[in-house]
Image (cartoon, one colour):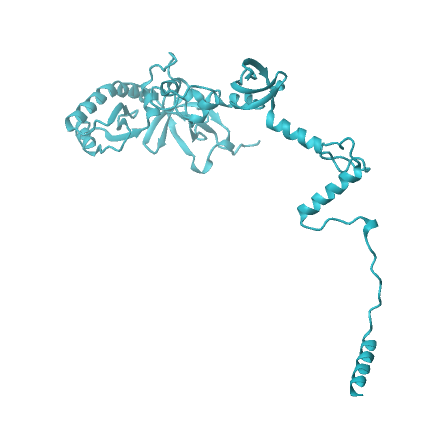
Length: 359
């Protein structure tokens, strides 16, 4: 009998539309999807729901925490009772903040009890740092049975908690199906041809809309092979200027002598590249015509001997390399091969010279 030693890992979420956290369920193999469990987190014991089975290779095994136990019916009832008290706690928090003063920059969006009421977190958002220590002490006296915590979140997370509807008229994506927020940049709006008017690209949270990410990769892929705006292109109707690009249709609108043409990417050729290729082809190739193989895509110019092209190519190559150009074989003058005198001959000449001076 083969016994599996791999841990049983499950994904647990603590909010209706929240991020999944991994826990080891090896001690409770009977736990299935949809069951509620009690787990230990950085914020104490929490009640969460099992939403999936995670392969071991996708989990961080050294930091994995085990499930404490499956949730009982009493745990679920207590969670519902404390959830009903959250609205009242939020109202008391806002009233206390107004009495203390100096907290106008903070917006308190939710009060959140733990499943057993042992802790109470007041969640707020603020554009700048706000000192909430006095408010926390005040609320600790009001809620003596729970440990009070002040938790600051971002504008996107606040919009996720509030829910409601987006500018499109549908419920906000962050409140319905987004478990994590993806980075959004202004470049995504530009590449999709969306107006950069703030009212057109910002959501109810005041940040760039999350939906700008949805079709961005499709637009990037669709724009491949299409010219950019204001680019000069060559078309079957002549040269013109691109005034509009339609990536999803795979076309571009070109103005040629006052007329507008909507052309596909196959009918468009960048003017600068086309002229560069034509000039290269007109220069010709030195290899072709001498038994060589043309590897540059050019052709020998008509009416010009291959020898002339070869000499010009050799001179250009020598000039680029910084060496003197090669000399044709027939123009090379052979120097007279005079024998070099040996050392004995040099000594004899030296003695004769000294004898002549003595005379």
